[in-house]
Length: 427
Image (cartoon, helix red, strand yellow):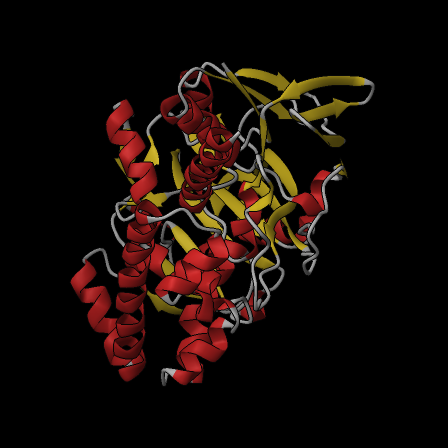
């Protein structure tokens, strides 16, 4: 029986355990995580009968890896219709608002931004084709993520910013600042100086409607994967050292150690603080990470704050331009008694005075959450970190240098399992 360790209990680690159970015969999997829960950057909070997603919030019908798992496991999901009701706020007034009918929304966009919309749609159609080719290439031949990206033309987008790519395609400065930038701020809390593939994926996330969530909350997804894999899950276990030996790898938690045939690292190495022995760790440009602060409040909205007449006019999601910093976006859900539950996302803690202006009268705090490393700070790269650090030692999180989502984490986990399977067969 093969014995595989997975370091990290987020979506990537739990998906790796799931695929290992599925594709590696007689495989025993142990998942380690320094936190006291499964899920990593997926976190669902239940309040007032609502699922408040504080981390990864949706996937699309084009996310093949997740959709395949959903269908095979018969998991319950629902369409997120309220995300079609959005507006863009510049810090003082709404500069754009969608319509409940997608056709009218598209017409309004075309009238306002003209050829920029068509040119961006053509770019996104090309992106869809390249992503479809990526899935095909992954099935054809085992390869490092960097090589897969190069084969299908995605790598060229990793070396430029989204701003550069859209400008080259002929999109106007107004379109980039008023529509593209608010979308990247909502998805990744970063502006259009974000690396190109991450930025394009942000736009695809809006363009690829419909979008979905797990019916009982997104946190149920990694938990289901871990449970289905029958993995031995060890929470609050910080792996601080990995030693390569002649017959495999020894992983250490302080003075405690366990032996494995192979190891999949499903956590950012920049944050994991793992020492390696007997392994020449490749060098690459170390990444910074984007902090995100979440605060959810309940009360009666002051619609005038957003330049509206009545609270009934306020859409479900408010995107922001750079002028609204540090606020990145707001999600609004009706709660009865004319009250709303509003989740604010920002890159710095918001002052209490902000909430006194957004709401009328009494404001009730619901929860707050801070992510010290919500996403990598996506900068243009000429080369991604390697997937294989050594034979049987796989870095599944290498893909996060270019893009971060539930789908890419699951895709990378599948590729990692196939790679470690190949390595173990050679032994």
